[in-house]
Length: 523
Image (cartoon, rainbow, N blue to C red; front, side, top):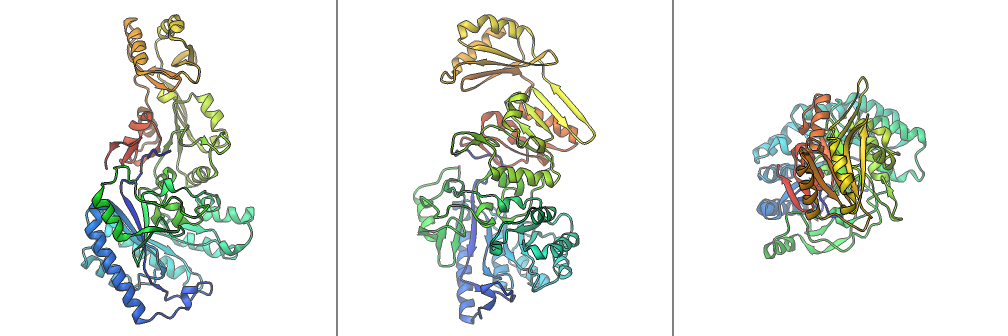
């Protein structure tokens, strides 16, 4: 499906990796710790970075560059030119996030001074920090994280999930401020699966750890809004994909010849060369609604969005057809839902399905949700710790009478949905191959109006024509549940893939929202 959902980035996400292959740490497992870097190598890396920074500044508007993450081989932020470059890039108005993967061994005061002197915008700086237990202590690392947070720098922290380091990582989680996310990477060298206890231990530290264990097949269609640029100018979709046939300068020439579409489609190879997205840099940069729900518009920085509530469409969003043609919630999406649930973020369905059918389709994930918006907004359910609440938007009983009398002429069945004897939705059902047309929808609307029935809205879903109260929408359902939660809709997140979702997407998170290529909101 090519539909972009709420939170999609209408622009290009860049990764950069220069020729730098050295580190000031000496971790026993790391090949870059053993490389003795020469002045010539450092000079080459500095020149490559300087050229890249200036071309980003020149091309940011034309290429719609929105974010930049440096993912080096080794440690880049001990070198002052990276801080100066970040300052220059972050001063560009269209670029909203810059940062790097780092071990946090750089001098904080001097580095930030370089950044700010070069025009840096502190609110745009993001750091992805990795804890190396062979080279630093929990106390030293957490102290650095706290100081950066006090400076107003957004950051995450994390480490590889080595089982014998579990107690150390638990201690690190305790030492860090609660708002700093501590992630755990899967240990590729473990050569076995994690035990159930090991998995549970790491989930107590990182609620999203199951995403590291879920298999996510590679899919180029989800990677058209990001590129990795090497110091030589070579391009790849991400850190593990094969090289493209074009280089960094080619991309600008293509853009000059033919403007790309507003949906963010960009030159890409026919295949990335990988069977799965096997690391966070690969799967975190995908144009994936769950990535944006969890980590905001620039998820590659791995800093959680932590929405105060999440509203999710069912069919086509949570539930899709698998390779065998059966509807399912994929292990990848479920891992994200499990993470949100463990992180204490309330989840709500937002679907046009009636309650019973939604429960049937979502039986494996039902327990993770605190209720939802059903029947297109006509039936609302809230299940909190101390409160349970249910509401329907009822329709006039005469609506059923009028449509039942006309069903033969309309060539359909009339299915009423009731709650405690009150009708809240009606479906005019035809055989699957017979879809409703706009002219027929208008005809039925006129039929009801002529019978004195007003205050309804009618929309088609293929062979189903749905009729419900005009007050019943997903948008109003979100507003109602947010009032119960005592939060603002803009503090919530949502995802969906149809025009029925447009109003909900527009009010949740106040981010860019596209349905079938149409922009509903521009942040």
